[in-house]
Each structure stands twice: as structure tokens, then as C-alpha cells.
Length: 165
Image 1 (cartoon, rainbow, N blue to C red):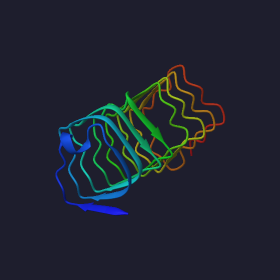
Image 2: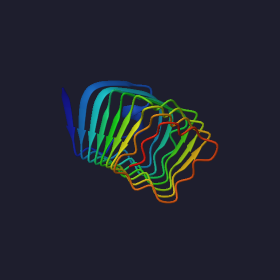
Image 3: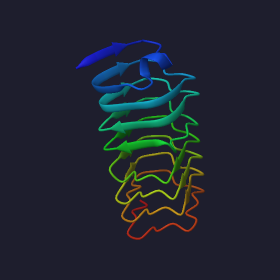
């Protein structure tokens, strides 16, 4: 597995490329416009994506651990079999996505917005979910065990068999 440490990445290094079986440690992806990039089996540890715009990007079977992803718009991002562990994801936007195969553990998603997303059986374990909006989402059998869920808005969403402990 390729390991990249403490690197500041540029758009030229990322855009239009495929990345697999790599590990980024303490790297900075800040203020970039990432386009047409695919990441498969890539680990991001303590990285920073602040101010980054994502356009036609995919993350498949990736792990984000302790990563700063605040205020990112994931509308044009395909995310499958990916884990978000202890990530800062305040104010993120997810729109018309199937996120059912992913997992969020100890992630701070406060003030994030999910619009028309499929979140069936998704795990939000011990997450900060204050003021999150789930608008027209399918949360059937989702698990929010141990998560802080004050002021959540479930507008027109399906919450059948959802665990809210």
C-alpha cells in the first residue's frame, strides 16, 4: 500500500485520476476543486479537505479517520462502503444519494442537510447530529445508537424501525 505523509496536494495531482490502495496521513486537500477523481480502498487519516469543491468524485471502500470535511457539498459524489470515523463534518450537504452501505462513527454531522437520500440500515454510531435535517429521506432501520439527536428535523422522511437510542 502506498503511504503519503504530510503532503499538500494540488488539483493537477488529483483531477481525472484513479487512486487505489493508498493511505494519506496528515495531508492537505484544502481549497481545491477536485473533479473526475476516483478513490478505491484509500484511507485518509487526519487530513483536511476544508474549502474543497467536489465534482464527479467517487469514494469506494474508503476510510476517513479524524478528517476535516466541514461544509462540503457531496451532491456530485458517489460514496459506497465508506467509513467516517471521528470526522468533523459540520454543515455538509448530501443530495439524492444512496448512503446505505456507509458508516458514520463518532462523526460530528451537526447542521448537515440530507435531501432525498437513501439511508436504509445506515449506522450513525455515537455521532453528533444536532440540527441535522433529513428532508424526504429513507431512514428505514437506520441506527442512531448513542448519537446526540437534539433538534433533528425528519421532514417527510421514512423512519420505520429506526433506532434512536
